[in-house]
Length: 164
Image (cartoon, rainbow, N blue to C red; front, top):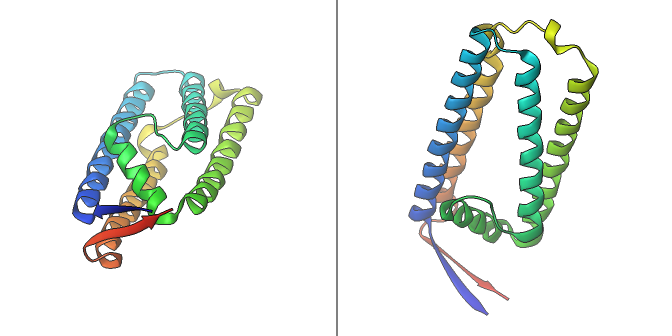
């Protein structure tokens, strides 16, 4: 049996760092989409781009479930290792597969809609139509901050677990 020790403060710092990175990427995407729409960009291209990104996320999720490794930085890998440790490999895999099924269904549905509808007739008004993106962004941040805070409440100091 191998004993692993996790420093909760280090995990909290890693999660905060990843939250900041996610926020910067989301901000970049929203600002880029806003400028693109305001400059008269094609809504077909924008929605097609979003479909392509969704399929890339599906492939990334499949790779992560299959190998237990993440495509990204060492920080992301350490956060994934902690998540696997915390939930147990089997429970983590079940949760990841459920998330993958939802992501796959959303990607497939978006792609079908992309090819079935005339998207050039779609009128996108940036400030009003982006309110839902800001709401998702806000609630994602609230949820992540709650999870980071719960780490300290659930595990007072460092974590120890015997792996077999």
